Image (cartoon, rainbow, N blue to C red; front, side):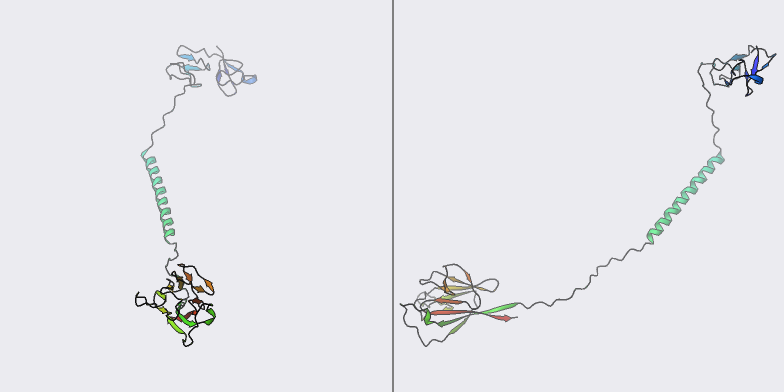
Length: 263
């Protein structure tokens, strides 16, 4: 059996294409190696790549990896890597320790940089506000000035007395009764109008409110009560102000005064 040599130097049993690598054999490369006998009984041809394989040299074809025992194709054994030497392991440990030391150093630098950041001091000091002087609370001193006004008389009214001068009553109680005195009934008004028989014994009240002002209330008098010329309803509180005029009876006139009294 003739053996041919391809351009890559492989021995081929085929004359046209290399039976080992498949390169075309032609020209001067097609050199037959005579005198080489066909494989002896100690050799066998690989059924996949037709390369000769020496019996006893292993179970796999050196060219394509064919398994002569199992018939598997391309089963090239996986080379077993050599175990790591103690020197290599020591080198890797040293490298890991160096990386860990570098990371620790970087963390220390970061923490130091954070610690060196100066935070603005937080204080509870607030800007001082200008002191505004307290306003003086103004309150009033309330008075009722009683007088005779003949213009209030009706055609049925008796002649008014001429010898009565105006009388001022200061309101100091929360409730002040306007009326006529009655010893029999124990009625003693704060503002007595005993000279006017058209005034009821319990005619009206002047009551103080929480804010210091006063209101007028007719409490069911016989002849009614006028405030600034208008008759007020019975049992209804009407606020009073400085300068108001109350008219009742035949010719009784009461002027309201609210005099400022600063404290």
